[in-house]
Image (cartoon, rainbow, N blue to C red; front, side, top):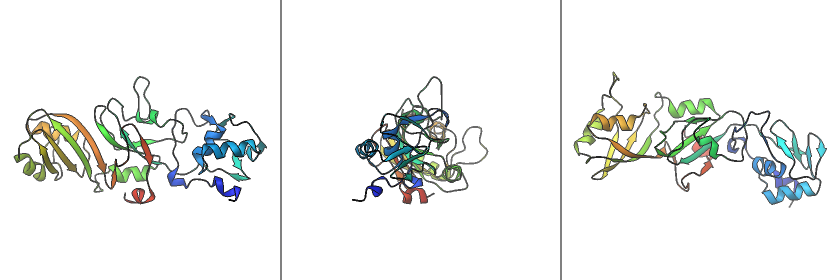
Length: 255
């Protein structure tokens, strides 16, 4: 195998990042930096460093524990590792975690992207603290707008449980649209599938504030458990609670 091919940079749409600190102060071990921002494994990165094939800002180093900032220029076999590009991630959010970029007192979804650094990330479609399931995280503002804007049709699928029995009449009411408190227009048609006496799957094409809970509240019911399992064509398949993954190019192109 050609040594130069072991460290091909990851395509820009697949890079993972996390802004734990400011861009200028963020740092990472050299071996981890190489493994994060290229196709090399951690072991290959260590081998390259040990053999003197890695430079930082033009200076060779054999210390795999050297701290590297995102502003440093790291090269392997003379090829500079590119850490530019947009970020597209899917996370299976656990309960008790808030959808915010930072918070001094509570854990945020970005706090669980451990080991990655980057420019500013944000959440495309937030979930309540007590709601679990699919959260999309990106650095691409235009893409995020397409995911969340009411001008685009983007299906969002939720599993839910309620305090009292879900009546068959809800199906027609949700399809017709619900007038929520403090709103002037009906919600867009929603598809309700009753799974059991107190559980259902609900598919929306919009994302109003606390919409699922408010819709059931308008019916005299209350949601006790809520889980988002799909946004557009992106699902939680293969993601355990608390885990995250890169979106594929096909998934990114869906929005």
